[in-house]
Image (cartoon, rainbow, N blue to C red; front, side):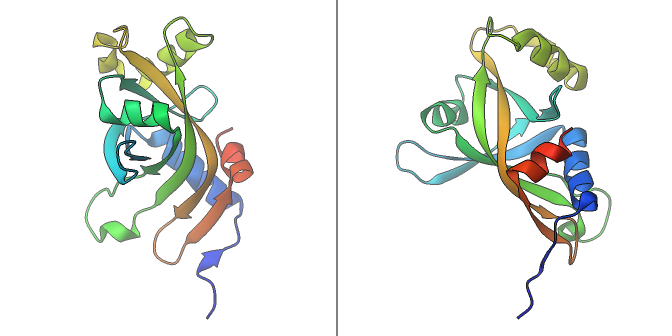
Length: 163
């Protein structure tokens, strides 16, 4: 049986970059520290100044506590638009490590500015003490560019796509 995975090329990297750059939210998968089962939550998401996915998360959320316990996670980026079969729309399953950047940490101000540029309503709560910016560092990804367009991207492919 022939593999359905295509060789990763510049078109795949460009599509991955576009999905990250245009994202306004994503599904975040993490492990529940109480029993090790997978959980999923919807989060606000933008491309940070370096192109890496960036979110703003409250310490009061279940996923914040879980990511602080185990920073390994994944993001599903890309949503169906318009009509038609939702499975024909591109999406990126990004495997990542979550890094919390808190008020007063180096780089927080630049990340906050980048986040607010794309999520301006967050200015109502970005200054709250229980909120931290979370940068997602890619470990690799699976890209589904639509029917018959599957790719496996390494960490370097994704990092290159974010530039």
